[in-house]
Amino acid sequence: MDSSAAKAVPLIGEEELLAESALHSSISADLYSLQGLDVLYEDRTATLWSYMNPGDRPSFTPAMLDDFETWQRLISAEFGPDKVPLRYLVLGSRAPDVFCYGGDLELFQRLIRERDRAGLVQYGHRCCAILDRNVRTLDIPMLTVGLVQGAALGGGFEALLSFDYIIAERQSTFGLPEIMFGLFPGMGAHAFLSRKLGSAMADRIIVSNETFTAEQMYDLGLVHALAEPGDGVNAVRDFIKKSDRRHAGLVGSRRAIKQVWKLELAELNRITELWADTALELREQDLRVMSRLVSAQERVAERIAAA
Image (cartoon, rainbow, N blue to C red; front, top):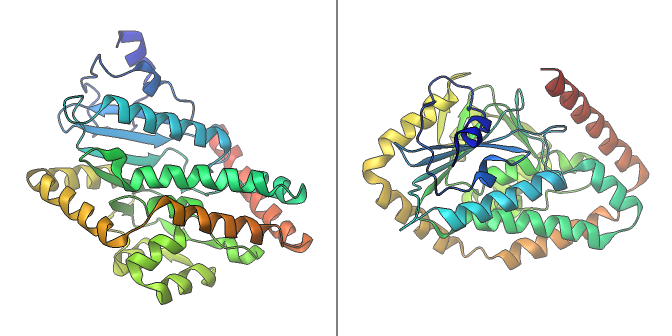
């Protein structure tokens, strides 16, 4: 990779990350040129740090899904045994106080009003495929880590559930607000939470419309480590340091757990199709509630743009 491409890679921002990380020339410059993801490879720990960096709303827009699909494709092609070493894959967010607000509610409203079931299903299937590949760690013997430094709502929370480990700063919040406008989370929450916590607790979280603290998620076992505000990157680095000697055992243990889960992409897709059918039953008053959430997301996007 040439020096200009390396300079184009924005550093993660936390001074603790090694600015002088060696970027392998065999890694495609395309990985460092994604519009919605900032990526840095740290040679010493074989860690790929990736931060969502949305240009507008901090949610899974079609453009962000495009970037995640490209990100996964390039990682699969260029990292792993006999390629560039990769032991840890970390995903965080640059959006201030937000990990991700989840699904593209503005798109959902339009598709619902147009009665476009195929469009809703296509969006959901794309999300499920990304989560399925993440659960399988892209068939690379690595550990995946979600770094949360703000609000993880809806699909943002669902996406985190596909990671091997979640590390959250104490001010972070988690929730599934879909029930407030007559819908339910359709891209993984039922499948993951039922396997991790049991169906009764999963249902309680999904239909409660409650916002949970990082401490509550830790007590439930969904968050694996807590960090003080602003110290999330250090907590991830500490996790990597403590995990390195037992990396093979941790990778094997996570694979064993997933064997027990017996979670297949087809199951995720079927739930998404139920979600699409339910979305088409929403009333105008439900869509107005969704509109208020879209407006709130847009205000956050304006704050991000002004920062």
